[in-house]
Length: 267
Image (tube, rainbow, N blue to C red; front, side, top):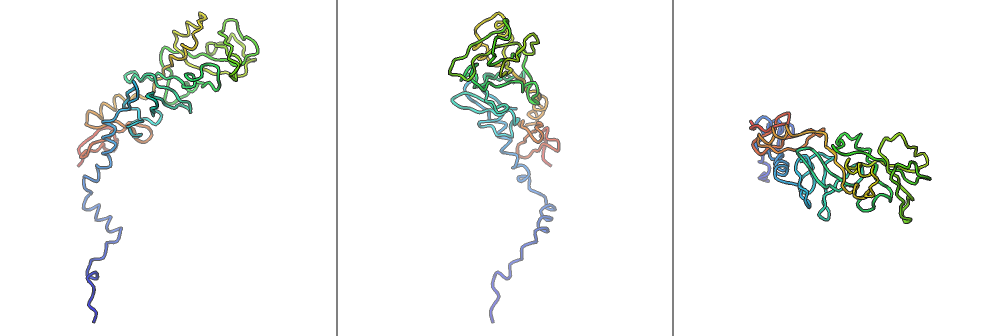
């Protein structure tokens, strides 16, 4: 007679539905409910984006800051010790960040590398329609007219381009100027410059390159200050959740509740 093996006395594994029911009835360990939040909490609390003279926290992400720590359209990158970001597929150099005023001062890298004549010059009309940004104070829009067959107005600045460039000339006008008729121009683009530079250009200052390289300011529309203060006051770290709404990441032992706005003891 063959004796039964030891394995025949082992209990059979529970069916999966019954196992899940027992898991719920016995309660989920606190460590399992909070550990999921730990990486986001520590990263969003402790990390800063640092590149050259630019340092940024919430609502930005990039570098050591995970994407959960900032707005998807406020991603910063670092290369050659210079901070940059992409907006509408155009790369801009970040010259300054003023978080208290929600202001970014940026400059197209194409302007830096190529100046005013080489195409494609980025058209900055996107600012008017952007759900994320709005034009900053103290800046004005001007229109660049390219390859005009003749001077479209004696009052406009007119530049002749180097023969190595695809464009032959460019005229500079205040945006929405109704006194000019640029029908004979092949291309146009709107750009932002400081109002102080605009006054200089009106006086026929030749320093167009200097006006461009100052960059221009945009403000990010959403103000997270109150929500972030509420989160950090409760011991949490500010980040972003679904629908780009502010979310409060909490340390182990706490959770942010159904609204995700502040940390509270886990019960």
